[in-house]
Image (cartoon, rainbow, N blue to C red; front, side, top):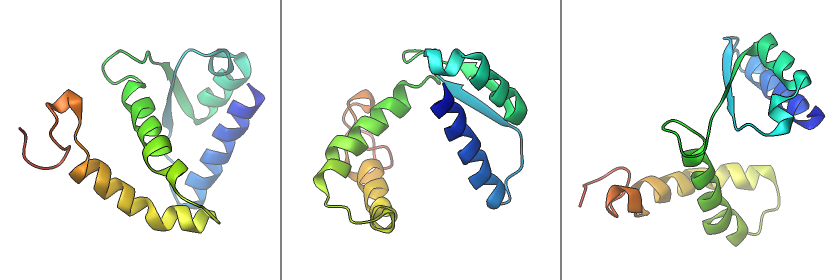
Amino acid sequence: MHLAKWTLDEAMTVLSALGIAERILVQSDGGSDFTSDLFQQACLTYGRWVRCKVSQPGGTGILERLNRTYTYQFAFRQDWHSMADVRAVMPDFHRWYNHERRHSALGYATLIGERS
């Protein structure tokens, strides 16, 4: 729970440095780190919190699937030397994921492009 709160605090510091000061909606699963009083109070400081299930529409399933694809189809296949290296190739991943990768939920069409 302390790491979850620290991560949220750090994210808000970055957003603030970018000039983004709006109140936010924190969306997470119902893990004990996220339902703890410590994390809940931090969420209320910055906005509010919503618990999502993986399978519900708008839930975390889409993000978890994207994260798995990024990790196994992209990140683990590179030899990273710095965060600058990671940032430099993210446009390549986005282009591949949106324009080339076929998605079974879309009838094996790409996200951006013609539907089969």
